Length: 493
Ligand code: NAP
Image (tube, rainbow, N blue to C red; front, side, top):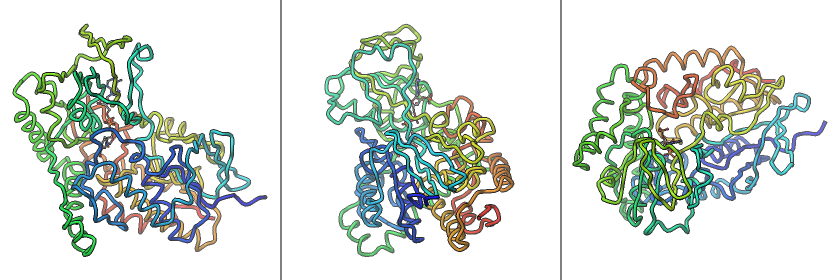
């Protein structure tokens, strides 16, 4: 029987896939292939380039611990700098040569005889690998709403993930559907020159003030020369986020008043930004702070007071070739429809490709029939030699990099044992998986997701069957579990 072509195939060349390859290369794996459907690396930071795009986790924290970047221009760096950072890491760690772009993966199937994954590309090619890592991120399958008439719209439609850089909003009559984190960044930008902007809001979002500032060049130089000072700065931004996570997300049961205070801060921001009480009421969420991802902006609420910006909350009845008709009968004529409608997460992204494991078990179907579950957020019984990096209970802490780094630790311990035993396969035991799942669902009980008033939040944090993306544990606890999980939780052969 032929040996597989690759030791490891990684699907996704974003920060998750880059982190996984850095870890594997550190352990001596060189025969790695990284596949990505886009034409360059960077994942979400390659795909998204809409006006106003910036990170909303402080940049020192939103980066790999092993590769600090002293050159962030702001506390919340613009999206272009994240893309540059991804390029820098891929080059420095010699990852780029493992990447193949414009490679759409349709699915992967475990071959029990060959003890290898067979990965099928959309162009008909098949590739084989001993190990498969899906690093497809959570926010990678854009959602296009199924609103009656949308296909007959005669103007321009732009989804935020496919921004047309040549599009000039100047003088346009624009409708935007959605009021998530993307819309909060886009709306103030578009209204600078648009003739009219009507925002169709279904669920209001909690927005709190953004304490952003530019980092002076001399400070950046100092960070480059004296990395310990930057480490100290990062310690502050890390600690700040972690305390927020531990108190108001994980221990909502005891610290509910902090969420109430955050909601009041958001309310105060509305109060100082908007005089019209009715407008403020429409923008006020009815669910607890933290059920759904809140965001930061100093200009979002104020933008709605401009005479050419309108908030429509009646719901959308249909789209006609020249406009949108709301459920209250109001028709708004437009020439551009901007979809800031987010992502099909539980529906289409978990998993993002069809994965068939041992005994022909289909991961997507199995999760839907039995509940979303993955040991330590990454391993699933009946799926040998697979690590799924964007699964249930995989999102650790508030920065995506906390997730990437705990998963690198997990790989470190797991692959170290595989190499030590000169083994061919690993598979998490059903017992270890159930134990982990029970523990996570019990821990959810104390969190804002378990205790808060989340009805009506339409939060993508929750699966339809009640699991969360978010691991209900501190990053410290999560990291230390990766260094210490019992190796007997896996069958390694
Ligand atoms: P999102 O948070 O899922 O928001 C999508 C919006 O579209 C929601 O307001 C949703 O309303 C609305 N929507 C979807 N389908 C609709 C329909 N059929 N009719 C009416 N409204 C509809 O997506 P996002 O804003 O793109 O943000 C996704 C995530 O990306 C964020 O939570 C964040 O994690 C990340 N992000 C980060 C940054 C950053 O770091 N700077 C920036 C942007 C995004 P409902 O709420 O009612 O469903």
